[in-house]
Length: 109
Image 1 (cartoon, rainbow, N blue to C red):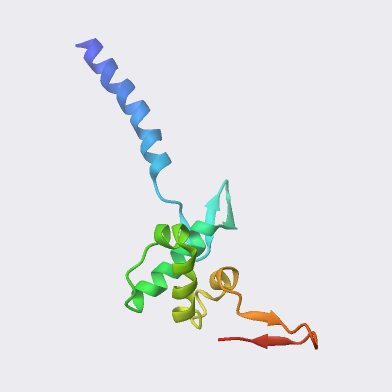
Image 2 (image 1 turned 90 degrees about the vertical axis):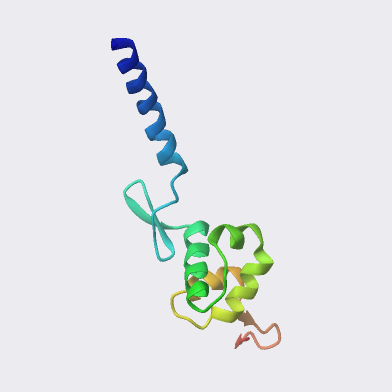
């Protein structure tokens, strides 16, 4: 009986950290909680874009956007005007472009 209890405890000790390692990152908007601080990460930016896109009727996930940058660019074109995704979409699809002739800043849609 003691061996069975010890084996169960050992299995639980190994299973809990493994489950936590597979858990999705803790995101708040574009930021992920890492070692006691909030850091902007590609996963959380993609997650924020996917969340807003789903609100607008586009079926996508953060994993899909990370795996297919062209899809992420297309989604950003559709939802890029939303203030919640603007910082994340700026990195995926450059909204601002510097005019080489004048050095001015042009806004492209």
